[in-house]
Length: 446
Image 1 (cartoon, rainbow, N blue to C red):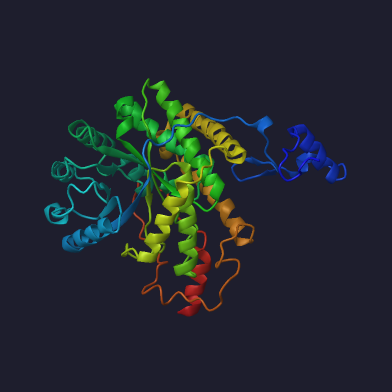
Image 2: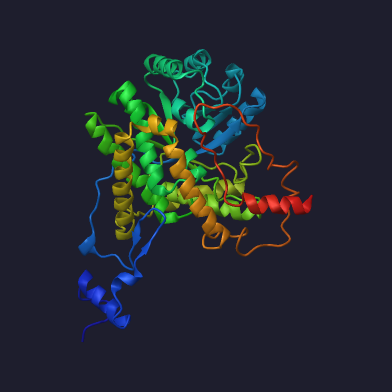
Protein backbone atom coordinates (compact mmCIF):
# COMPACT_ATOMS: atom_id res chain seq x y z
CA UNK A 1 0.00 0.00 0.00
CA UNK A 2 1.35 3.42 -0.90
CA UNK A 3 2.04 5.92 1.85
CA UNK A 4 0.01 9.07 1.22
CA UNK A 5 2.28 11.06 3.51
CA UNK A 6 5.47 10.29 1.58
CA UNK A 7 4.47 9.46 -1.98
CA UNK A 8 4.70 12.27 -4.54
CA UNK A 9 1.45 13.71 -5.82
CA UNK A 10 0.75 13.37 -9.50
CA UNK A 11 1.72 16.63 -11.24
CA UNK A 12 -1.09 18.87 -12.42
CA UNK A 13 -0.84 21.37 -15.25
CA UNK A 14 -1.85 25.00 -15.02
CA UNK A 15 -4.80 24.22 -17.30
CA UNK A 16 -5.96 21.50 -14.91
CA UNK A 17 -5.84 23.90 -11.98
CA UNK A 18 -7.88 26.47 -13.91
CA UNK A 19 -10.49 23.83 -14.73
CA UNK A 20 -10.68 22.83 -11.07
CA UNK A 21 -11.08 26.46 -10.01
CA UNK A 22 -13.81 26.98 -12.59
CA UNK A 23 -15.60 23.88 -11.29
CA UNK A 24 -15.44 25.21 -7.71
CA UNK A 25 -16.81 28.53 -8.97
CA UNK A 26 -19.82 26.66 -10.41
CA UNK A 27 -18.90 27.53 -13.98
CA UNK A 28 -17.81 31.13 -13.41
CA UNK A 29 -14.84 32.22 -15.52
CA UNK A 30 -11.45 31.78 -13.88
CA UNK A 31 -10.61 35.35 -14.89
CA UNK A 32 -13.09 36.69 -12.32
CA UNK A 33 -10.43 35.95 -9.68
CA UNK A 34 -7.80 38.09 -11.38
CA UNK A 35 -7.14 41.43 -9.68
CA UNK A 36 -5.35 44.52 -10.91
CA UNK A 37 -3.27 47.00 -8.89
CA UNK A 38 -2.86 50.76 -9.29
CA UNK A 39 0.15 50.04 -11.49
CA UNK A 40 -1.85 47.74 -13.75
CA UNK A 41 -0.10 44.63 -12.39
CA UNK A 42 -2.27 41.51 -12.68
CA UNK A 43 -2.40 39.23 -9.63
CA UNK A 44 -3.54 35.66 -10.22
CA UNK A 45 -5.11 33.26 -7.68
CA UNK A 46 -2.29 30.77 -8.24
CA UNK A 47 1.08 30.49 -9.98
CA UNK A 48 2.44 27.44 -11.76
CA UNK A 49 5.69 26.28 -13.32
CA UNK A 50 3.93 26.11 -16.72
CA UNK A 51 3.80 29.93 -16.72
CA UNK A 52 7.16 30.45 -15.03
CA UNK A 53 9.75 32.61 -16.77
CA UNK A 54 12.86 33.41 -14.76
CA UNK A 55 14.60 36.69 -15.53
CA UNK A 56 18.37 36.94 -15.44
CA UNK A 57 18.82 39.51 -12.69
CA UNK A 58 22.27 40.62 -11.50
CA UNK A 59 22.65 40.02 -7.76
CA UNK A 60 25.01 41.79 -5.34
CA UNK A 61 28.47 40.29 -5.06
CA UNK A 62 28.66 41.00 -1.34
CA UNK A 63 26.31 40.65 1.63
CA UNK A 64 24.23 43.69 2.58
CA UNK A 65 25.17 46.01 5.44
CA UNK A 66 23.16 48.24 7.78
CA UNK A 67 23.53 52.02 7.87
CA UNK A 68 23.07 54.52 10.70
CA UNK A 69 22.19 58.18 10.04
CA UNK A 70 24.03 60.90 11.95
CA UNK A 71 22.99 64.56 11.80
CA UNK A 72 26.04 66.78 12.20
CA UNK A 73 25.17 69.59 14.61
CA UNK A 74 28.23 69.16 16.83
CA UNK A 75 31.41 67.64 15.44
CA UNK A 76 32.33 66.07 18.79
CA UNK A 77 28.86 64.58 19.27
CA UNK A 78 28.77 63.26 15.69
CA UNK A 79 32.15 61.57 16.15
CA UNK A 80 31.05 59.98 19.43
CA UNK A 81 27.78 58.70 17.94
CA UNK A 82 29.62 57.29 14.94
CA UNK A 83 32.17 55.50 17.11
CA UNK A 84 29.42 54.00 19.28
CA UNK A 85 27.57 52.81 16.17
CA UNK A 86 30.70 51.10 14.85
CA UNK A 87 31.13 49.35 18.21
CA UNK A 88 27.53 48.12 17.87
CA UNK A 89 28.40 46.47 14.57
CA UNK A 90 27.17 49.10 12.10
CA UNK A 91 29.16 48.96 8.85
CA UNK A 92 27.87 52.11 7.15
CA UNK A 93 27.44 55.64 8.49
CA UNK A 94 25.41 58.31 6.70
CA UNK A 95 26.21 61.87 7.75
CA UNK A 96 23.43 64.42 7.25
CA UNK A 97 25.28 67.65 6.41
CA UNK A 98 23.46 70.99 6.53
CA UNK A 99 26.60 73.15 6.35
CA UNK A 100 30.38 72.81 6.09
CA UNK A 101 31.91 71.18 9.18
CA UNK A 102 35.26 70.37 10.76
CA UNK A 103 35.83 66.91 9.28
CA UNK A 104 39.20 66.58 11.04
CA UNK A 105 37.33 66.41 14.34
CA UNK A 106 34.53 64.15 13.11
CA UNK A 107 36.81 61.55 11.54
CA UNK A 108 39.72 61.70 13.97
CA UNK A 109 38.89 58.26 15.40
CA UNK A 110 36.83 56.75 12.58
CA UNK A 111 39.34 55.88 9.88
CA UNK A 112 40.62 52.42 8.90
CA UNK A 113 37.70 50.60 10.53
CA UNK A 114 36.27 48.99 7.37
CA UNK A 115 33.18 51.21 7.46
CA UNK A 116 31.46 52.89 4.51
CA UNK A 117 30.95 56.65 4.80
CA UNK A 118 27.80 58.05 3.21
CA UNK A 119 26.91 61.73 2.93
CA UNK A 120 23.69 63.66 2.39
CA UNK A 121 24.48 67.29 1.62
CA UNK A 122 21.97 70.16 1.71
CA UNK A 123 24.39 72.16 -0.45
CA UNK A 124 26.86 71.55 -3.24
CA UNK A 125 30.35 72.90 -2.59
CA UNK A 126 32.95 71.31 -4.89
CA UNK A 127 35.81 72.82 -2.85
CA UNK A 128 34.56 71.43 0.47
CA UNK A 129 33.77 68.02 -1.04
CA UNK A 130 37.24 67.89 -2.60
CA UNK A 131 38.87 68.62 0.76
CA UNK A 132 36.67 65.97 2.40
CA UNK A 133 37.57 63.47 -0.31
CA UNK A 134 41.27 64.01 0.36
CA UNK A 135 40.72 63.30 4.04
CA UNK A 136 38.86 60.08 3.23
CA UNK A 137 40.92 59.01 0.21
CA UNK A 138 41.63 55.56 1.68
CA UNK A 139 38.01 54.90 2.69
CA UNK A 140 34.89 53.76 0.85
CA UNK A 141 32.91 56.96 0.33
CA UNK A 142 29.49 57.75 -1.14
CA UNK A 143 29.08 61.48 -1.73
CA UNK A 144 25.56 61.00 -3.13
CA UNK A 145 25.55 64.14 -5.26
CA UNK A 146 22.34 64.30 -7.26
CA UNK A 147 21.97 67.61 -9.08
CA UNK A 148 18.94 66.32 -11.01
CA UNK A 149 17.35 65.06 -7.81
CA UNK A 150 17.93 68.46 -6.21
CA UNK A 151 16.19 70.12 -9.16
CA UNK A 152 13.25 67.70 -8.81
CA UNK A 153 13.01 68.26 -5.04
CA UNK A 154 13.57 72.01 -4.78
CA UNK A 155 12.55 73.19 -8.23
CA UNK A 156 15.94 74.83 -8.79
CA UNK A 157 19.53 73.98 -9.66
CA UNK A 158 22.16 74.58 -6.99
CA UNK A 159 23.59 77.29 -9.26
CA UNK A 160 22.66 76.60 -12.88
CA UNK A 161 22.42 73.69 -15.31
CA UNK A 162 25.84 74.44 -16.74
CA UNK A 163 27.64 75.07 -13.43
CA UNK A 164 26.12 72.07 -11.64
CA UNK A 165 27.10 69.60 -14.35
CA UNK A 166 30.54 71.16 -14.70
CA UNK A 167 31.20 70.96 -10.95
CA UNK A 168 29.95 67.38 -10.77
CA UNK A 169 32.15 66.40 -13.71
CA UNK A 170 35.22 67.85 -12.00
CA UNK A 171 34.59 65.76 -8.88
CA UNK A 172 34.04 62.60 -10.94
CA UNK A 173 37.31 63.10 -12.80
CA UNK A 174 39.31 64.00 -9.72
CA UNK A 175 38.03 61.15 -7.51
CA UNK A 176 37.30 58.22 -9.84
CA UNK A 177 37.27 55.60 -7.05
CA UNK A 178 34.44 57.22 -5.07
CA UNK A 179 30.69 56.87 -5.59
CA UNK A 180 30.10 60.50 -6.48
CA UNK A 181 26.60 60.37 -7.96
CA UNK A 182 23.29 59.40 -6.40
CA UNK A 183 19.88 58.86 -7.97
CA UNK A 184 17.32 59.68 -5.30
CA UNK A 185 14.44 57.45 -6.30
CA UNK A 186 13.15 57.74 -2.72
CA UNK A 187 11.82 61.21 -3.57
CA UNK A 188 9.40 59.74 -6.11
CA UNK A 189 8.12 57.01 -3.76
CA UNK A 190 7.65 59.40 -0.85
CA UNK A 191 5.74 61.80 -3.10
CA UNK A 192 3.31 59.06 -4.20
CA UNK A 193 4.73 57.35 -7.30
CA UNK A 194 3.79 53.68 -7.67
CA UNK A 195 6.32 50.87 -8.01
CA UNK A 196 6.33 50.88 -11.82
CA UNK A 197 6.81 54.65 -11.96
CA UNK A 198 9.67 54.48 -9.44
CA UNK A 199 11.58 51.95 -11.52
CA UNK A 200 10.92 53.86 -14.75
CA UNK A 201 11.99 57.19 -13.22
CA UNK A 202 15.11 55.61 -11.70
CA UNK A 203 16.20 54.42 -15.15
CA UNK A 204 15.26 57.69 -16.88
CA UNK A 205 16.93 59.76 -14.17
CA UNK A 206 20.22 57.86 -14.35
CA UNK A 207 20.13 57.87 -18.14
CA UNK A 208 20.56 61.65 -18.05
CA UNK A 209 23.88 61.15 -16.24
CA UNK A 210 24.92 58.36 -18.61
CA UNK A 211 24.17 60.52 -21.63
CA UNK A 212 26.16 63.40 -20.16
CA UNK A 213 29.19 61.54 -18.76
CA UNK A 214 29.18 58.23 -20.63
CA UNK A 215 28.66 54.64 -19.55
CA UNK A 216 31.97 54.54 -17.69
CA UNK A 217 30.42 56.43 -14.74
CA UNK A 218 27.93 53.60 -14.11
CA UNK A 219 30.12 52.22 -11.32
CA UNK A 220 30.21 55.59 -9.54
CA UNK A 221 26.45 55.75 -8.92
CA UNK A 222 24.32 54.75 -5.94
CA UNK A 223 20.52 54.47 -6.14
CA UNK A 224 18.54 55.54 -3.08
CA UNK A 225 15.21 53.73 -2.86
CA UNK A 226 12.40 54.16 -0.33
CA UNK A 227 10.73 50.85 0.51
CA UNK A 228 6.98 50.73 1.11
CA UNK A 229 4.80 48.23 2.95
CA UNK A 230 3.60 46.14 -0.02
CA UNK A 231 6.07 43.40 0.90
CA UNK A 232 6.37 41.27 -2.26
CA UNK A 233 5.94 44.23 -4.62
CA UNK A 234 8.83 46.04 -2.95
CA UNK A 235 11.04 42.97 -3.35
CA UNK A 236 10.03 42.79 -7.00
CA UNK A 237 10.59 46.53 -7.48
CA UNK A 238 14.28 46.32 -6.63
CA UNK A 239 14.73 43.19 -8.72
CA UNK A 240 12.99 44.79 -11.72
CA UNK A 241 15.24 47.84 -11.37
CA UNK A 242 18.40 45.71 -11.38
CA UNK A 243 17.17 43.92 -14.48
CA UNK A 244 16.40 47.14 -16.38
CA UNK A 245 19.58 48.92 -15.31
CA UNK A 246 21.57 46.03 -16.74
CA UNK A 247 19.49 46.30 -19.93
CA UNK A 248 20.24 50.02 -20.26
CA UNK A 249 23.96 49.55 -19.64
CA UNK A 250 24.07 47.10 -22.54
CA UNK A 251 23.25 50.04 -24.80
CA UNK A 252 26.37 51.77 -23.49
CA UNK A 253 28.49 48.64 -23.99
CA UNK A 254 29.35 48.51 -20.30
CA UNK A 255 28.53 46.56 -17.16
CA UNK A 256 28.24 47.57 -13.51
CA UNK A 257 26.62 46.24 -10.40
CA UNK A 258 24.08 48.85 -9.28
CA UNK A 259 24.64 49.96 -5.70
CA UNK A 260 21.25 50.17 -3.99
CA UNK A 261 20.73 52.10 -0.75
CA UNK A 262 17.32 51.32 0.74
CA UNK A 263 15.46 53.01 3.56
CA UNK A 264 11.93 52.72 4.97
CA UNK A 265 9.32 54.87 3.26
CA UNK A 266 8.06 58.06 4.88
CA UNK A 267 4.77 57.92 3.01
CA UNK A 268 3.07 55.39 5.30
CA UNK A 269 4.57 56.61 8.59
CA UNK A 270 2.29 58.23 11.13
CA UNK A 271 2.32 60.36 14.25
CA UNK A 272 -0.09 57.83 15.79
CA UNK A 273 1.37 54.95 17.80
CA UNK A 274 4.82 56.01 16.67
CA UNK A 275 6.89 53.75 18.92
CA UNK A 276 5.22 50.54 17.75
CA UNK A 277 3.41 50.84 14.43
CA UNK A 278 6.12 52.77 12.60
CA UNK A 279 8.79 50.47 13.99
CA UNK A 280 6.98 47.37 12.72
CA UNK A 281 6.46 48.96 9.31
CA UNK A 282 10.11 49.94 9.06
CA UNK A 283 11.38 46.48 9.93
CA UNK A 284 9.05 44.83 7.41
CA UNK A 285 10.26 47.28 4.76
CA UNK A 286 13.88 46.52 5.63
CA UNK A 287 13.08 42.84 5.13
CA UNK A 288 11.78 43.61 1.62
CA UNK A 289 15.00 45.50 0.93
CA UNK A 290 17.06 42.50 2.04
CA UNK A 291 15.30 40.05 -0.26
CA UNK A 292 15.14 42.60 -3.07
CA UNK A 293 18.93 42.74 -3.16
CA UNK A 294 19.78 46.08 -1.53
CA UNK A 295 23.46 46.64 -0.78
CA UNK A 296 23.00 49.03 2.13
CA UNK A 297 19.91 49.30 4.31
CA UNK A 298 19.10 52.20 6.60
CA UNK A 299 17.97 51.28 10.11
CA UNK A 300 17.09 54.85 10.89
CA UNK A 301 14.71 55.74 13.67
CA UNK A 302 11.11 55.09 12.69
CA UNK A 303 10.17 58.63 13.76
CA UNK A 304 12.95 60.37 11.85
CA UNK A 305 10.48 62.42 9.82
CA UNK A 306 9.70 64.60 12.83
CA UNK A 307 12.76 64.19 15.04
CA UNK A 308 16.51 64.15 14.50
CA UNK A 309 18.27 60.79 14.18
CA UNK A 310 18.64 59.20 17.62
CA UNK A 311 20.90 56.63 19.21
CA UNK A 312 19.98 53.10 18.18
CA UNK A 313 18.55 51.05 21.06
CA UNK A 314 20.13 47.67 21.77
CA UNK A 315 16.83 45.81 21.31
CA UNK A 316 16.28 47.44 17.92
CA UNK A 317 19.79 46.55 16.80
CA UNK A 318 19.31 42.94 17.90
CA UNK A 319 16.16 42.66 15.80
CA UNK A 320 18.08 43.81 12.73
CA UNK A 321 20.85 41.32 13.47
CA UNK A 322 18.19 38.59 13.52
CA UNK A 323 16.90 39.86 10.17
CA UNK A 324 20.40 39.54 8.72
CA UNK A 325 20.79 35.99 10.03
CA UNK A 326 17.33 34.99 8.80
CA UNK A 327 17.99 36.33 5.31
CA UNK A 328 21.02 34.05 5.02
CA UNK A 329 18.74 31.04 5.44
CA UNK A 330 16.00 32.03 3.03
CA UNK A 331 15.63 32.91 -0.63
CA UNK A 332 12.83 34.33 -2.76
CA UNK A 333 14.45 33.85 -6.15
CA UNK A 334 12.41 30.72 -6.96
CA UNK A 335 9.03 32.25 -6.12
CA UNK A 336 6.74 32.06 -9.14
CA UNK A 337 4.69 34.93 -7.68
CA UNK A 338 7.66 37.28 -7.22
CA UNK A 339 9.08 36.40 -10.62
CA UNK A 340 5.74 37.20 -12.23
CA UNK A 341 5.45 40.56 -10.48
CA UNK A 342 9.09 41.40 -11.26
CA UNK A 343 8.56 40.69 -14.94
CA UNK A 344 5.38 42.80 -15.11
CA UNK A 345 6.98 45.74 -13.29
CA UNK A 346 10.01 45.58 -15.58
CA UNK A 347 7.89 45.46 -18.74
CA UNK A 348 5.64 48.35 -17.73
CA UNK A 349 8.54 50.45 -16.45
CA UNK A 350 10.38 49.91 -19.73
CA UNK A 351 7.34 51.22 -21.62
CA UNK A 352 7.29 54.38 -19.48
CA UNK A 353 11.05 54.81 -19.91
CA UNK A 354 10.69 54.65 -23.71
CA UNK A 355 7.84 57.19 -23.59
CA UNK A 356 9.98 59.57 -21.53
CA UNK A 357 12.89 59.25 -23.94
CA UNK A 358 10.58 59.89 -26.90
CA UNK A 359 9.32 62.96 -25.05
CA UNK A 360 12.80 64.44 -24.83
CA UNK A 361 14.17 62.70 -21.74
CA UNK A 362 13.73 62.95 -18.01
CA UNK A 363 14.97 66.52 -17.60
CA UNK A 364 12.72 67.72 -20.39
CA UNK A 365 9.67 66.08 -18.86
CA UNK A 366 10.53 67.48 -15.44
CA UNK A 367 10.63 70.98 -16.93
CA UNK A 368 7.31 70.39 -18.67
CA UNK A 369 5.77 69.10 -15.42
CA UNK A 370 4.84 65.72 -16.91
CA UNK A 371 6.68 63.66 -14.26
CA UNK A 372 5.16 65.76 -11.46
CA UNK A 373 1.66 65.36 -12.90
CA UNK A 374 1.96 61.58 -13.20
CA UNK A 375 3.19 61.24 -9.61
CA UNK A 376 0.44 63.56 -8.35
CA UNK A 377 -2.24 61.53 -10.14
CA UNK A 378 -1.13 58.30 -8.46
CA UNK A 379 -0.71 60.04 -5.09
CA UNK A 380 -4.28 61.35 -5.27
CA UNK A 381 -5.55 57.88 -6.15
CA UNK A 382 -3.77 56.41 -3.12
CA UNK A 383 -5.06 59.23 -0.92
CA UNK A 384 -8.65 58.50 -1.97
CA UNK A 385 -8.13 54.81 -1.24
CA UNK A 386 -6.76 55.67 2.21
CA UNK A 387 -9.56 58.13 2.95
CA UNK A 388 -12.26 55.55 2.17
CA UNK A 389 -10.47 52.76 4.07
CA UNK A 390 -9.51 50.68 1.03
CA UNK A 391 -5.83 51.33 1.71
CA UNK A 392 -5.25 50.54 5.38
CA UNK A 393 -2.64 52.02 7.70
CA UNK A 394 -3.05 50.39 11.10
CA UNK A 395 -3.50 52.89 13.89
CA UNK A 396 -4.51 55.67 11.51
CA UNK A 397 -7.65 54.62 9.60
CA UNK A 398 -8.08 51.12 11.10
CA UNK A 399 -7.73 49.74 14.63
CA UNK A 400 -7.42 53.26 15.96
CA UNK A 401 -6.30 53.83 19.54
CA UNK A 402 -8.51 56.69 20.64
CA UNK A 403 -6.17 57.52 23.53
CA UNK A 404 -3.29 58.34 21.16
CA UNK A 405 -2.25 61.96 21.37
CA UNK A 406 0.19 63.95 19.26
CA UNK A 407 1.34 66.24 22.07
CA UNK A 408 3.90 63.89 23.71
CA UNK A 409 5.60 63.41 20.34
CA UNK A 410 5.57 66.98 19.08
CA UNK A 411 6.73 70.20 20.68
CA UNK A 412 5.58 72.44 17.84
CA UNK A 413 3.10 72.46 14.99
CA UNK A 414 4.52 70.26 12.19
CA UNK A 415 1.81 71.24 9.73
CA UNK A 416 2.68 74.87 9.11
CA UNK A 417 2.81 75.66 5.43
CA UNK A 418 6.28 76.38 4.09
CA UNK A 419 6.92 79.74 2.51
CA UNK A 420 6.73 79.60 -1.26
CA UNK A 421 9.64 80.76 -3.38
CA UNK A 422 10.28 81.16 -7.07
CA UNK A 423 11.31 77.95 -8.82
CA UNK A 424 12.32 76.95 -12.34
CA UNK A 425 10.08 73.87 -12.28
CA UNK A 426 7.31 72.50 -10.10
CA UNK A 427 9.06 70.76 -7.17
CA UNK A 428 8.17 67.19 -6.20
CA UNK A 429 7.05 67.26 -2.56
CA UNK A 430 6.97 64.19 -0.29
CA UNK A 431 3.62 63.75 1.43
CA UNK A 432 2.47 61.22 4.01
CA UNK A 433 -0.98 59.69 3.62
CA UNK A 434 -2.04 60.40 7.21
CA UNK A 435 -1.27 64.11 7.27
CA UNK A 436 -4.88 65.24 6.84
CA UNK A 437 -6.05 63.11 9.79
CA UNK A 438 -3.15 64.31 11.91
CA UNK A 439 -3.87 67.95 11.12
CA UNK A 440 -7.46 67.46 12.30
CA UNK A 441 -6.30 65.76 15.50
CA UNK A 442 -3.72 68.47 16.12
CA UNK A 443 -6.39 71.15 15.84
CA UNK A 444 -8.65 69.27 18.25
CA UNK A 445 -5.85 68.95 20.80
CA UNK A 446 -4.82 72.59 20.57
